[in-house]
Image (tube, rainbow, N blue to C red; front, side, top):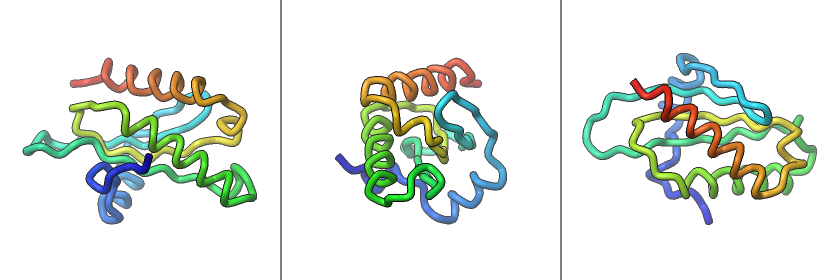
Length: 115
């Protein structure tokens, strides 16, 4: 299942998050997170960047990206966040359930930090 366009981070906001987002470090991935003002109904927006250092084959990188997008799309948060997620090489060795648990842990940490 692909991530709907409304949940994807547009290029202009991607650059804004990349240069002014707060880094969040997890065991198997890192992320840049930027909070937005709660104006209207705008859900959290995501971008997943899988480097060629993670795997040399684009097929494997795209599979990982799609799996992360699928996990993120199943979680509905009203935190008004823009996020860029950078998976590490170790994430390729995880099962689907373990990736889901990692993302749950990440989301729980963000909910706990809610201002």
